[in-house]
Image 1: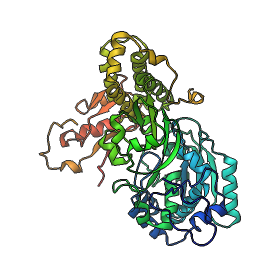
Image 2 (image 1 turned 30 degrees about the horizontal axis):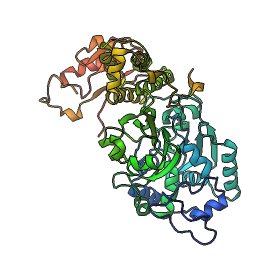
Image 3 (image 1 turned 90 degrees about the horizontal axis):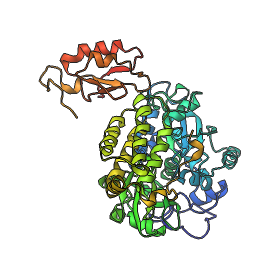
Image 4 (image 1 turned 45 degrees about the vertical axis):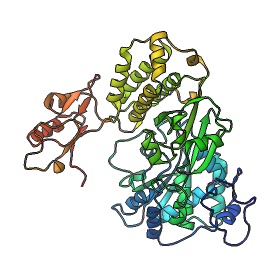
Length: 435
Length: 83
């Protein structure tokens, strides 16, 4: 996408960004409230039902990884049983616990008022009287800057519902929606068993709307420019634009806003793909390896990724250089995921460390050919058997590694670890979460 | 997905039949359900129950209810399918 104009327009009702224009992050520094208003126009107001219907029509799906229709989530919370239109809670999830992702932090630091607009609009649409903005510390988001943005709005009398900034606990699972709610309710920041769904009983036992911060920023724009405008970018199956984080073997890594459906090759080319690259991890650590260059034609959209056997998840695309070992990378991530399990569910507590250990034997040790069957058996034993999707995600990642790096598996089994396996890691694994 | 022993020929339409579900956080692998309903519940290598997916056949529903009642941690549930 291109940056619209050279400066933020200063007077009059600003025009809606064009279909190929940047929508969410229009420049590299934070937009103050005045600049934000000049760029997008004032916070619109209207009947609550109208906004929910508009978001439903837009086809916006959650940008935190789950891709659940945002409008349907809003309607469920607005229509939840209990006292009509009062006492609901809105949670903006900017935890970004995915180690390779930085899009939520970049969005919060550059365009805090879009997210805060989204919170205000959703609070009024679902009838909330409490709102939380949950932020992680991975991507350099500053609590102080966010608190300043919140205070700026309070001074302008913008938000009828006060926004409380809540630092998300460390750990891979702390940003999961039931874990966030658990923490806000004064319990451990770990996932809980569903039901009850957050829409039925969430924070403070009230119906709770949890949306990713990027999803809220899109809602702030849909409220201004409408669902048709939103869907002018993207594909019919995955409308709109999205923030993606590109890391690994590229010259210009970082966060980009793209119209969904952009071919992966076009995106990677723009980021300066360093050739030869052997594979790309899509969807973060719950994701899937896709081989390069075959995957360059895959559209970066939900249906495009699905057709390739992968998922877009929270929009992480990590390029594996030819000089790295995909098995070693996956084994390190598997160990990380195993260490991140909350210890609550037996199959995950027992199965994930066993799965990670088996993969580490393939990557770094001397394993016999039977180990492939054991890895597949373990992946089947853990998938779908936890309260959250950690075991499913780990199983899927490991399975895709065995497929995409099948030749490496054979080489490791016959001759031991390759020289690339002892090279420096490409995928980040936060050491501070290791215990 | 595995097929249930009694196919779908009984009076209760399969879609209306309850399903077994385990709360994996509450489950402590006591294994009583595996003893009581081996037709639908087997043990994984660590003793935790693996539930055959799908609706519980009519003839196994009394046993399923017994297994639910026997669980010391109330982790096993018979849930009505979503409408």
